[in-house]
Image: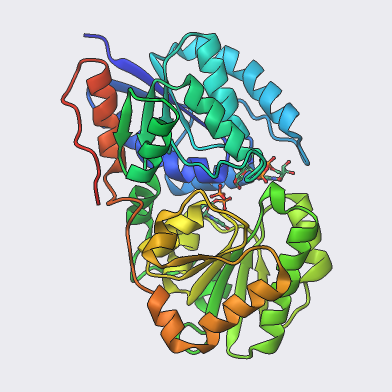
Length: 381
Ligand code: UD1
Ligand code: UDP
């Protein structure tokens, strides 16, 4: 029997971190030819992940331009995908999450009548503009997909409520699979500054911020809140690997640079980032991925957004929504910095997002779909 040609498509840093372990799992299955097409919606930040996971794509659309718009990303992906699909002739295309690459990848698969598997399916805020454009991207992909790999029961229920009743699997999130390969107790950072941080002596707060809906006033408020926290607490050090988006960099330069106890550094390779997270005191972020990783590592998270499509860790008590108002963010951070009991209540490891076997379940589900294996059991934590 011919091998199934399964093509994974991704383009940004978080998609890459969550898809590299899956591309490898698929490659390990004798029934599957695992193909990898990157759009390079992110260039440097994507390449850094490919290097950490030692993965060489079969096709690279190389679309990134500085300050790219949603329309340029989507149209360049669509045009590039035509060629990739014609050349690689996949039996199924896998897309991940909610980026413009995800949406364009799924739409392109549909135009070529190639079935689509959606990894990290069913996340919702039910607010069309928040996160923007991600909420709409993932809804549109739900309309196109044939197989839905939901990280949690809650994600599956969201899809059931929308009338999607077939092809649903609860797999856990592949980010936990990735974390299992990167985090090591004896890890030594290649970024020397990270080896010199006063872990244990001071409270190291790991910060990231990049979302489009936070551009402008919310991002300014976030930066000013971070500044206030660092200025007022000598026992704190903020470590902030700054996203390469020029909009984010401008906000950081205008409102945060030069503040004592704030380490502004370049984006970290995924293994460095995961090990830094494992050693920090707490996390402040508007990222989706960090909301999944930090709880698994027992680190409290303050989410710098008005909403989250990841309520599971909020329910488990390790994540809190801090919003985008300066005073609110400062108050919530100070509670965790100064109140030992409040900190202890949040700092426990939970794993609502997976057990590290999501990729195995996804590969099994794909083989089952093509009549070449048994249906995998759902991940029920
Ligand atoms: C994108 C995704 C977002 C995801 C985020 C992860 C969309 C619309 N947004 O947002 O869902 O959470 O990635 O980080 O799909 N840049 C570089 N080098 C890089 C990466 C980015 O220079 O390696 C700069 C470029 O100027 C680029 C800009 O950052 O134009 C913005 O990148 P883009 O992918 O458009 O948006 P993100 O905010 O990164
Ligand atoms: N990350 C990284 N280096 C960094 C910042 C983040 O490797 O300097 C990782 C992080 O651990 C997580 C992912 O990138 O796995 C999250 O990506 P991002 O915040 O860009 O996107 P989101 O998750 O919000 O879509």
